Image 1 (tube, rainbow over the protein chains, first blue to last red):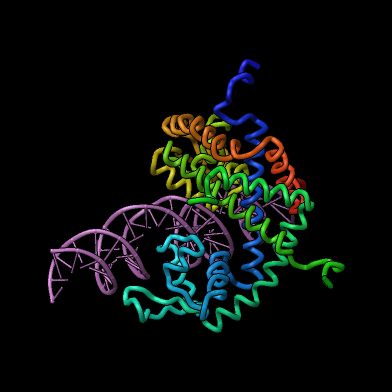
Image 2 (cartoon, each protein chain N blue to C red):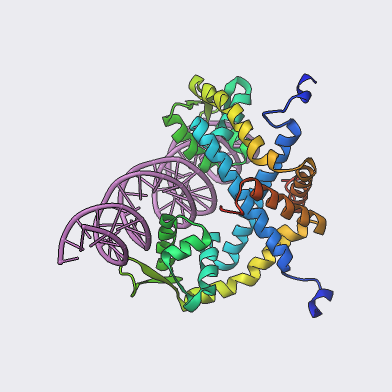
Length: 159
Length: 159
DNA sequence: CCTCGGTTGTTGACATGTGAATCATACGCG
DNA sequence: CGCGTATGATTCACATGTCAACAACCGAGG
């Protein structure tokens, strides 16, 4: 084991296996929970995130850029998504009084109902698929590991 | 705390925070590593996965369905992706001798070179972005947690 | 007032993903 | 052999994501 005395530039087999287990499993779990959300409520993960932000916003409405920043999406991504959500009657876009460039994104009553109907089933899915799979210690370890990764990527401070 | 004596149907705040930390961080880390791969080698994560499977396959070729099963993709997804990869000269599709319905997906020399040129930078990225963020204990914990989730979803046995 | 740089939101071109429908072929069975 | 069904792969319509270019508008300075 000549190598073991030097700083490795690449992962060991063990480390690589941990990487694959982590990244593949997280994808599968995310997909599973989003599928449940869609079956239960007809909402995608993106829909849910937009509706959550709007339902907590003042007057159930936000400026588009503000919303994009809040949920950390590209503006063009939000624009396209809002178009689809508007077609389905979940949100409405209206011109903005203070700034004629912008528009206000407003949660419709229908969107509000859809969101509120979705939260309980969604939380149940998170519980059943994710939380119930793990011991409390494992949950804590996951939080720690996630925090360590974010620190490593400097996602906590200046961003 | 009336509730704490009953089996909760939904996550606690702590559990929900762990869920969000886990799922959001895994997305960010995946995106970061795929971005590195793309900068370094011009390959997407999907490209890499296909090329890895083909480069390990007998004769650097596989039947399309076999490949789809191996990397756990929908066949339609693979079909579309292969179309794009074929346009870029990374793979070639040729009719299959034994079964006229099927086709063999063959790794081209160009695809083989692209893949081999990409592995070292990719592994370095995994090391720097993921492995180096964590202690050995945290890596083990991640593996355990991933294994527990897969067991919970019955992804190990009958699928 | 008017120009100019920055902001806001949309659009276009594309890559990527899912599910249903389709088409050709393969294969078991009478 | 010939029929019915299963299978291999693609295609379609659509949702979702990125990035760059754009049009309209704001606001500061001359």
